[in-house]
Length: 171
Image (cartoon, rainbow, N blue to C red; front, side, top):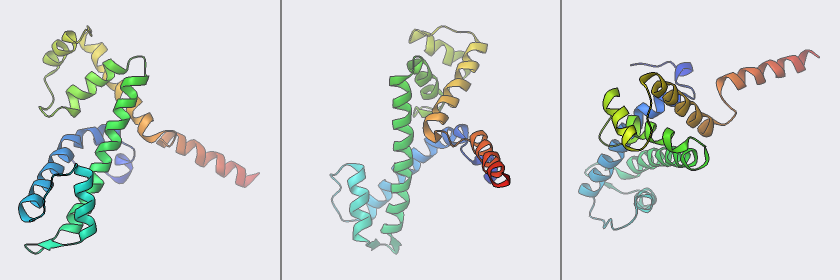
């Protein structure tokens, strides 16, 4: 599905839908670098990316520096999402419920489950709810994560700020 720049701007749902693919691309990219490089990679992922980027070497005609820079940006984005999800989970009154919903839908390696199975899994974690409640909580979880990720720079706030600035210019 194609998204315009306006539709993708601060779109938390779109970001979450890309999470698994980004994680997979990061893992595959690192595996390719490991295969094509004679370097020893007994380092944490972040350090591996820094070493490759700093060396600026290339093997098999591929510049590893470029690939490492791209992978490092992906890793940083995933870390930002993970930290935001952790903050939501640990600090919000419904954080554990929202975490479970986001995890089961977007963050787990297994992929999203059908709604009935998802509700059963949530019951196993002590969260009993109807389909309607589930979808309401799912939207609330995505909105809350968006507010943590983007803060007060959501489209609505930016439009309000733009109107305020325009009003100041006319006064």
